[in-house]
Image (cartoon, rainbow, N blue to C red; front, side):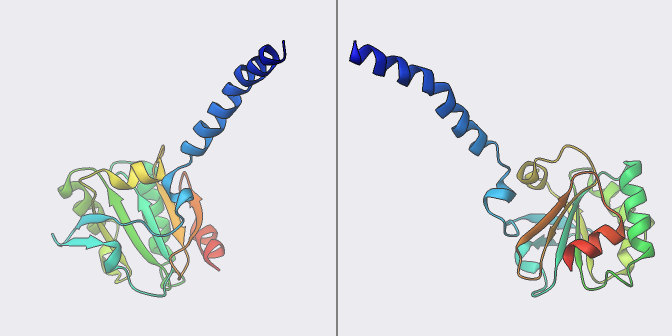
Length: 166
């Protein structure tokens, strides 16, 4: 009888143990390892830009976007208006869309005017998988030490970004 009771307890607890494992595995990689990921994008000047290309000791915003997304276009316009107050932040705009569409977005929305902005194509689809992106624009912020600070799953105002990195 004692063995039957133990077996029953083990069987009843299996779903709990399985669920705990599943919940841990469902954490996005950026929460498991809260440092800037190792990425590689084809930038608008046709060179490869990687995490090793990022400037040191400066906060970073990784923005996953779609060139034809109205919210992404709005995000670019709003950030462009406040770039003077965002000059201490480095922006990486990333998309999976065709290279020519990304390049057009980069120039049409004035992002090309700033030395602290790079845009490019992620041919391996690494960024959206790493962050489990569901909507664009998606923004991941990292502090000057390369540690994850905050995510914005549907974009953010320049003010929200400035407050998050302070």
